Length: 225
Ligand code: C5P
Image 1 (cartoon, rainbow, N blue to C red):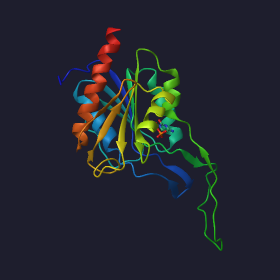
Image 2 (cartoon, rainbow, N blue to C red; image 1 turned 45 degrees about the horizontal axis):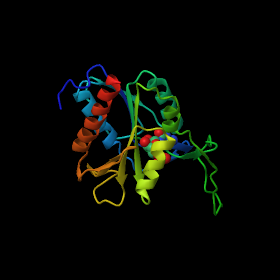
Image 3 (cartoon, rainbow, N blue to C red; image 1 turned 180 degrees about the vertical axis):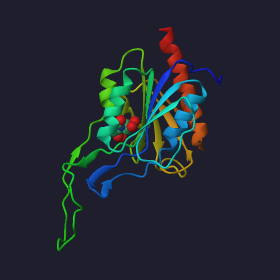
């Protein structure tokens, strides 16, 4: 792919997990490393795009001068940053593993064990960033989602494509060895309203190339319409 292929395009990417505070020293999180999202950001920047990378808590660095990084912790913070950025973006790739639930209340002091045998945490649903952006997406914008499924992957992915108004969705299955969370490799399928393309197991850098090839293609078509 040509290096300046995405010159002048603004791409927003969410990456990593979110942490939902329970008390000052504890949180609910997940195993997302952020590697896939960071690889996508690097690939977009390499092709000339101006990237805004909205990152949850991850142990990763970004070097590229065309990547503006916004660090967030919770789903609520990621939602706010995404809302602020999307309007001005040509495309958004939602790669973050956003918590679906967060504690209803955050204890202001460390919760003590004392003599309790049980502790009940009340959780409430977080906002769906993808669905909220899908609802305001314009014809000149692309929205790309991810799905990590343990069962009924095709059907679940198609459901998300519709519900969240994605242009296409990247499916990675937890059933594949070497794919998904924390690995340096990934095995994906890209699903849109016309069908499905399966890709072999590759490094996340190479997977990012495949995804951005597709994104870039679709952006060209948007421009032509
Ligand atoms: O419904 P599910 O969480 O499996 O959907 C996954 C897709 O939706 C991913 O692209 C993820 O980044 C996005 N998502 C989001 N905000 C949420 C939950 C999921 O943007 N609160």
